[in-house]
Image (cartoon, rainbow, N blue to C red; front, side, top):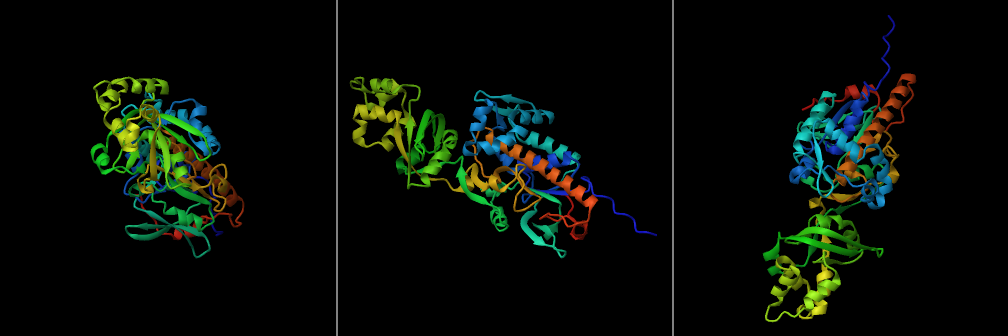
Length: 454
């Protein structure tokens, strides 16, 4: 009898691997599964979405409701690269997607968008249920080690598991491995040398959305660490001479300053520190008052009142704000009314360094957009796509980080599905070698150890 013909490959028989079970990786898996691809998600952590859940502890800020031009501007020098991703899956599409999971959202007073219950866990549970229903399989405690050559010359993925090392073949791979912050939650940047060794262009990873160290006195540190500074503003002159000014609030830490207002300006402050030993920002302790009004109030005769009582009664400056004036100004300035008034509107604070990269909220740098196609496939590694924070972009907190992670995962997953459609067409039409970096033939795939989903 003639040998049975091998069925022509289809998207249903193609295999895709997603490495990284955060928002970008899960969104890539969803995009692939929606096209009928068998998807296996691998992650080094014991459970899915650990950093996502951590981000939701203070209220799950999903995205932002501000107008599109302002939203896109939050991505700074990478706005032109993020724009096509948001065109595919932007803030409103993200909200619609969340609603389809059965989770309602609302817009806060600041324009930030949250789930109604403010929590990340219910959203993640509903999402994982839908992914499993679509056939996505999860393999936890599988740490990616890179690639190895199979006996027939193909390239396969290596993973370290509790049972030892194993190898996995796939026709397409999406890497969503995060940046270098919060290594204990899985983002440890161990992928950087693996990709660099394969010729992928990776920009150095740098802290962003981070706090900064200041040279506090022991007295100030002991008394005021943890104190919030509300109704203040920060002004900074960027490395190219641009003047930035933003109002909000931040917190005095034991080592310096941190909090939402600091994070919003962390990129220009960090860039200044790359060129100098220290960066000086200017604190406006009375942003609701003009410089003229502040000067008039400070210069007003105070009679027998102390300076502290005078500043408190005339300008509401007390507590940590008053202590900052004494911490940052020479004693003689405190008794020079004109100089003191000027300092209240522009108090110089010298910052020494960004906090260590492992403790910051997110990182800049990563796989450069110039090394990828528009669907986020690596030029040096056909069939390998990248998504999420491991790409070279940054944004402030406020939902911008998550939105771009979701969007890039969606684009990378769709790109991988398109790539697999081409693979299936080539395989069904000819047996010529495929131009894939990842494993593509069924022979090596069947020879690899099977890994059951946990």
